[in-house]
Image (cartoon, rainbow, N blue to C red; front, side, top):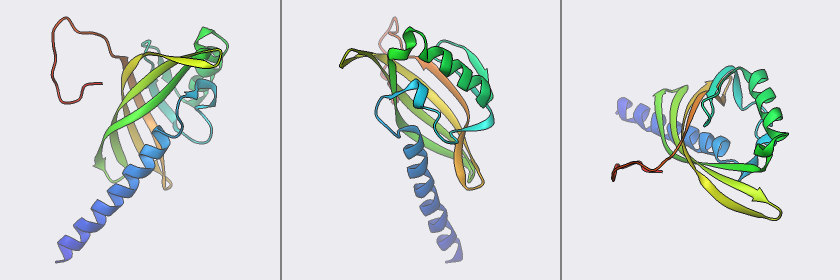
Length: 152
C-alpha cells in the first residue's frame, strides 16, 4: 500500500511539473524573439543550437544573439512551441519534444514559414524549471514518405 501511495504522489508531481513545463515553453502565441528571455528561462550555462545550426553557450551569448537577430530581417520571425511529449529522466530533469511553428510578420499579418522539431533538456533548480539545452532542426520534405508517430 505504501508503494502505491508513493507511486500516486510521483504521478501527481509529474503531472504538475509537466503542466509547469508546458506553461514555460508554450507561454504565449507567437512571442517575438526579443521578448522570449523575460525572466529566468535558461540555466546559467545553457547550450542552445538554433535552427540555423548556431551553437550558443550561456545566457549572455544567447541574449546577444537574440538582440542581433531582433535588429535584422529575423526581427519579423515569430515562433510558438507546441509540446508533444515530456519524459522525466529524474524528478528534476526532463527531456521535452516539441514542434516549433514559425511565422513571419508583415504589416498586420503573419504567414506560415514552416516548422522545426525542437528538443529541450529542462532542469529543476531551486524549485523552478529552466532550459539547460535545446536543439532545433527545421522540418524539411523527405525524398520518401515517412509515416512515423511523431511527425511535425
